[in-house]
Image (tube, rainbow, N blue to C red; front, top):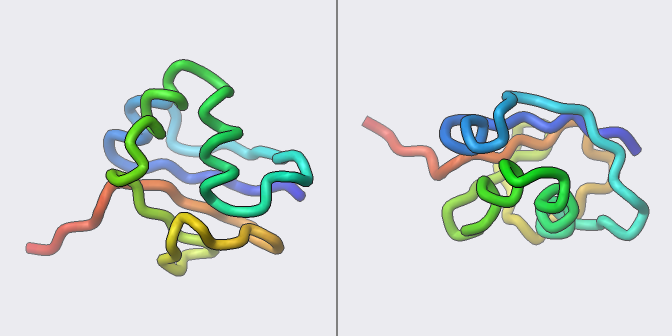
Length: 85
């Protein structure tokens, strides 16, 4: 399964890119698993994902909790909490 990853704000800055296409192994079943797997990809990924309390996620443009299953996801976005104003 190939997933288009989108990164926003300081997550994008830490990783050094706004998007990437990934093919996680079969044992990566949730967004949390995906974050664990991606954290090993680079120092930037590790920095961006070090504090999960500061991360929010969306699967195919729908907000979801980090323990959500990724089966069938085409796009996953990771970003800081959204604030209104």
